[in-house]
Length: 94
Image 1 (cartoon, rainbow, N blue to C red):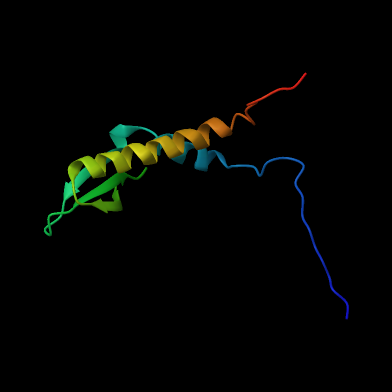
Image 2: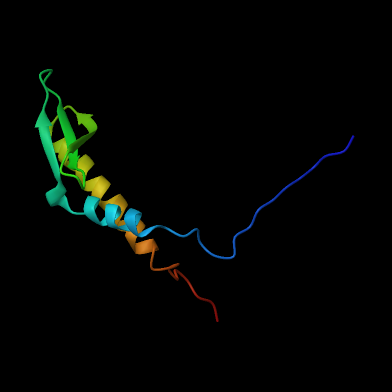
């Protein structure tokens, strides 16, 4: 029986498009987010798309939970933008 193995390697990080970077920058600003109350009493987090339409993201039971979800999303996109600068040195050895 013959097995075929294939591996792939990159010599650099996959390239991110400028449109994707602008989208992450847009989502990392709190002014582009809002919370709406639904008829069932839940709160929905939404972000304003770049064409000024609102896109729903998550639903939470409380306003505080919804705001925490927005803060977590903003933090996530800020981290993505930070990693575009290259790898971070976390420890060096002598």
